[in-house]
Image 1 (tube, rainbow, N blue to C red):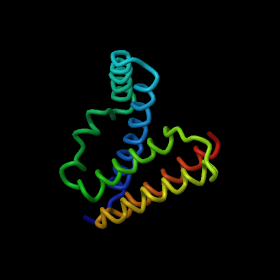
Image 2 (image 1 turned 60 degrees about the vertical axis):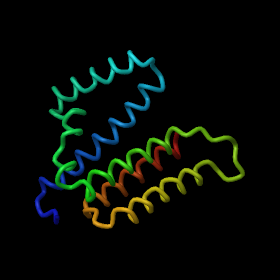
Image 3 (image 1 turned 180 degrees about the vertical axis):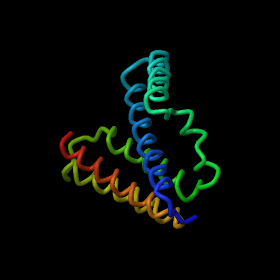
Length: 143
């Protein structure tokens, strides 16, 4: 499917942005809270985002991209989101190489893997993935 409408591009960006924020928040919540309090915080977060932004985890799970654009938008963005979480959350011992070089290689490798396995990915999804990976790399540099 070729994206020709601005609404489709905005939909891809909002889906990808919320997916990344939600995976980061879920990882952080489960890492720093108990199981039941993490579920409580996630339900509260979804209620608030549903009321304020009219976009919640339920809309992400039932989004039209899962049915119509599974291999061209949804799966590449999910794989990118998970790889960004891994790159941000991994605890590495002191290495011979600088930690930022290893993280950069991880982020580039995951994007290369996604490009190879999803050749029909939409161009706006690729651009979003590149931008969010660059953002995470810059975040890692100052983290």
